[in-house]
Image 1 (cartoon, rainbow over the protein chains, first blue to last red):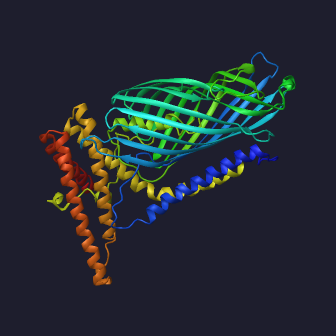
Image 2 (spheres, rainbow over the protein chains, first blue to last red):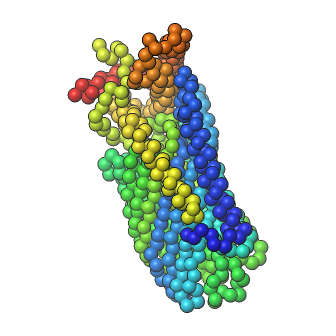
Image 3 (cartoon, rainbow over the protein chains, first blue to last red):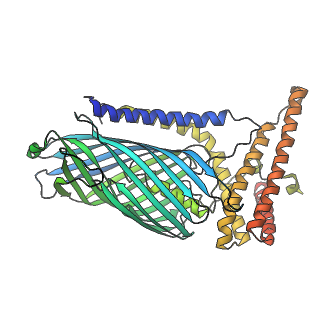
Length: 398
Length: 146
């Protein structure tokens, strides 16, 4: 990723999104820390939110592979992604004194940078792409079994050095989740998503079998299918299959597309299948690494002339399949502050899982594991008095 | 983008450095909470309907109780108890008055949630809950003695 050699209005816009994201992130964080610092000693301060602010970074690289039945020869792709979500408002109330419904409003930020490299006689270019999004999400849990999740992420996706006006797009997710029991939940919903390389309206149909804090199978069509299992106290593993992709403005460097103008659109997706290892270092930090094979990949080139309908997929003038290849994906996540307890509250476990499943930037690459869900199999070493002083009363000593 | 990534990583290192101090105590607290929940779960044998209503209320109760106890500990100066001889009478009076206020808040909270527990669980299970909490503390004390 270069430092923007030729800054034009669009690149500036995306770069501005990055700057704004970073500044907003610092602002939210400083508020969190200053709140903690200025706490009056007598003021009893409980955690306000169920979801803690999370900053995550992940990076994926796909090895060079052949573009099937094309004179483009080979293509190589990598992308890095910084995402941040933070609670803005959490409202909990008592219904009939025994049921605790809750509503949470979160802000989301995401900046993605990546590179698409073609090697062929007709196009030997390296496109540096950027994408920035600022969004909102709401989660309403009725305190019993039903949870609604809504996410709205407008974004700007652009190539670094390009002289056109920016295109703003909108990704949305609306999902209903029913936690039938700790071991089973289902989801239905709708998403307007670009993860398949174009503007698609996709249904969401999902099933989870098994407890989220133990071994479970998650089938969330068309986003993710995974088998997840704990490995000891701090690690978990996952065998998964999921699509990743997007649509970007592209400088037209392909001599055979010269009739399409200087700027075209580029859509791509890959279906990744592999193994992911998650490491939960503590309550504030987790990381993951995954690797496997990308199959059923596709790239498409879409004209940038004519009117655009935000509701329909755009028609590509060329679409190619890409040969299977290997991928490596790593990620780290940082969590800040305290959160309300959700032990054995399986509806909130599902709410947290939804928050992690539908990532802020519509990249289908979120923070990795569900770090907020408590691990039920804990043991403790070197227990000392100060660790339990809040639990002990005078009468316990007699 | 490179610039921001660099800034991000610098910030990350800073965060990781500061996290490492606070992490251990907070992690232990989380672990104890998870162990307590597992212990109570075993003792109470709740039906799925009871569990669905009980645990959110119990979690809320624990959060409030923890907050009061933390405030009390801070008020009294944490592990290094305040040296009252070095304080003015006014300061000492404020400190002990605040402590009593917080103790009363704690008792009021326990009373309020006692009624909530009774409305979601049969009274024998509420009694079992209190017994389980006591037994868990005794288990912890045993571990400390070892």
